[in-house]
Structures are given as structure tokens and as C-alpha cells.
Length: 124
Ligand code: 5GP
Ligand code: ZN
Image (cartoon, rainbow, N blue to C red):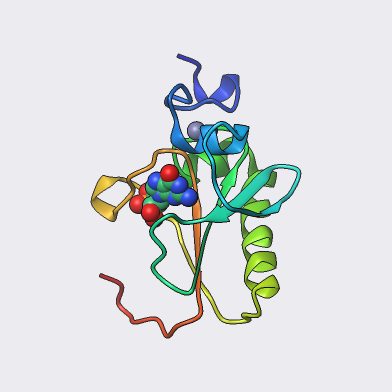
């Protein structure tokens, strides 16, 4: 397996659901793309707008993405803002679940963009 220093693949890109979506092999509702990111609607939306922004390259989580490709990491946030703005929201929540206990179920870094309803705090 490649180490973090050797390239974008950290963990396993093989059989990765979001790598499949980026490649267009797995169908999804893509709403926005940039040089390094793809944004598509979450299959199980938790708000009127619930979009996932992912790097095109496979990193297991946000911290590995930030360490391996800071430019793509920043692009995730600017893409998320563009998505929220395009859907008419200037108020939105961004979530980066990291680790199973925090609720991460897909181990390809992804930024949740949630908007269109009031958000409770603290999150569950
Ligand atoms: P996590 O729980 O890892 O932070 O977020 C994974 C998200 O991916 C969940 O919100 C889940 O609904 C979404 N998801 C899981 N499978 C699919 C899929 O096949 N297509 C899309 N568009 N979203 C998915
Ligand atoms: Zn992947």
C-alpha cells in the first residue's frame, strides 16, 4: 500500500464508493465540480440541501487530505460555499465526520453541506 508521502491514495481506493462516483461508475446527482473536487447530493438527505463535496483523489479523511493536498482541502470549502450560494443559502453547516465513532461511514474524505432548515447545537 502506498504511504501518505507517495501519492493521493491513503487507505483503499479500490472498491471505494466515492471513487466510483468521482469516476462516474456509480450514479449520483452531481451539482458542482472544480479542478480537484466533485459535489453531489447525499442519497439520504438530512436537510433540504444536503450535498457532499469530495476530493477527486482518494484520501481516507479530511486530515489526510489536508496533509496530502492542502489546495484540494481548501477547494472543498470554497466549493461548499459555492454550492450553498447556488442553492440560495448564505447560512449553512459544514460537517467533516472523522472516524467511525464520529459517524464516518464512507472512508473517502467528504464535506457535508447542510442548509435549508434551522440547525440544533450541540449536534447529536
Ligand atoms: P458519513 O457518515 O461518512 O459522514 O457520510 C456518508 C454519507 O454518504 C451519508 O450521509 C450517506 O447518506 C451518503 N451516502 C452513502 N451511500 C451513498 C451513495 O451511494 N450515494 C450518495 N449520493 N450518497 C451516499
Ligand atoms: Zn475513494
